[in-house]
Length: 238
Image (cartoon, rainbow, N blue to C red; front, side):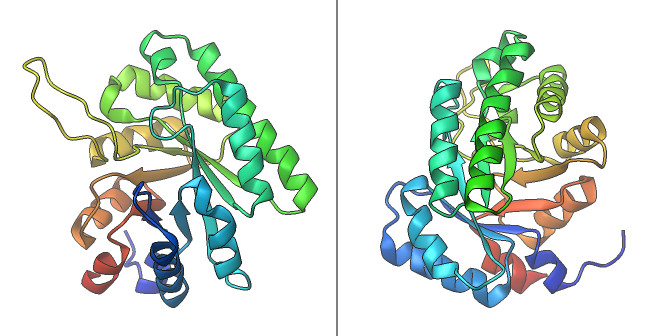
């Protein structure tokens, strides 16, 4: 892999603040940091989209927000409404959580519809505000088998999404003995996702990426976007 410069790395980072406790000052802070470093986007909860859009106006940094977050258990029509509203408020990227239960039951036609509802709503809303908006599909891979990950990636691709994404970072999977297990991105799964979607879609690694070493591992596995709340630390270490 060719060496990635700090400037190139910055364009791969979604600078993330998804805490339910985040207030206006927190959003002002990450937007200021994102402009300073030239990050791809700030990723915020929907309530903060309009504020972030106003703070980032005139910059190259996009506003990313989440839909059906973090459980993915909203009705497809509700996710579509959330996404449409976010685009109207200034979101340039939408990260939606899939219907995880549908994936676990092998109902991938239903999963494709779930994703397609959001994609179509975003495309229509984008036409009205005259800007294109990316749709990233969060699989929450900590709950899925490899086969389910592959099929979910295929559903996202069929539905016309732009990216598949590993994790919310809020999952709480447990092993058979009830012990908590890792809920974030791992290189093996990122590699599987990249192999499945090919080069036509983006792959976003998110969840537990807190160092330059881990970010590099994800990029080498095939990720071309990194979701992290540790963007500043990663940039300093790179």
